[in-house]
Image (cartoon, rainbow, N blue to C red):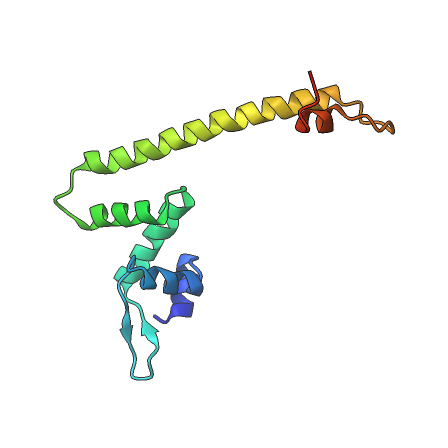
Length: 131
């Protein structure tokens, strides 16, 4: 398959595919005599793996680690679970942070009259002028 076909099948852009090749996340594909990339079914499977992992918020470095574990049949599943648990902890922390931000913004919005007057408790708070 050429890069366009692989991009269409996996949902990974050709630009991203070339990037993943450049950082050795996927192996360099075979080339035709004309220099065009030719991808195997295994390459497509790896790109599906990468897309799914990236879609779940894993960094490129984490994806590389997960891919290495995926390709290592002697791996311990505990290693994989540890990476996923760490990601879950990051998500939980982010949710807590976002809930706090939401509560603060809700309080500020509730304090604002939202009318034609120029006074605005939201802007005062941002400027550190609120009590």
